[in-house]
Length: 280
Image 1: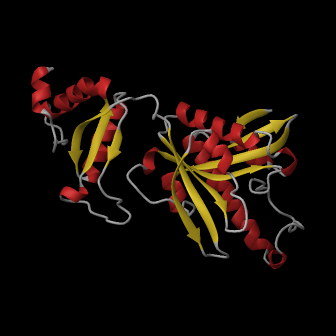
Image 2 (image 1 turned 45 degrees about the vertical axis):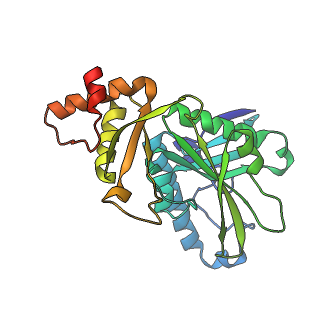
């Protein structure tokens, strides 16, 4: 079995064996489409074109938007993913909004063909997704295993096998009741033993400082005491967000912040450890 990233040529050629990724122009509605679709060929065609354009945009901007599991050139499984900001924009994501959106990839679809299930294909796809995300500097992965009260959870085992941790459960009532278990994986969890705080400010200012540090090779994480989708504070103590860096890079981070502060740039710290600066 070989796993390859989804690329533009796959979308242009079409993937007949992947129903959710076969976005070629339609001459007629396939038999497996819902019966009512036959009266709306033009609408279905328009939707396919929009989805193809969206995937092309993701591949061009982020490098890929999915993975294909191949055996003798035949697709036996696939996985699609979106940056969390893009997922929320199209209404796909079910987990809470937070200040880690720009660091998070969200699972769109995980599917293994029936004859290949329970043979480790899903686990290998999720493992390849983790490796791809690490190589492309993503920090968090989020995924939802789906099910309901009468059936087993689908997609849960490959996530658990790859170190994903359960964070919450949600229920949707759009067409029928279905529950989703949300899982998250921190790709740096085992790489950094200790994170130390170097900055605290309001959300928009924090994003500027975070981008500055990461552009100089200093990994960062953000922390806050509230869930902003529930309590959307942007000012005052409840609106403050903390920036943390690996302990071994604390001196470098403080040096960079002190340097830009001394140059009179428009970054003005709310929390700046003067004692540690004096000891550096």
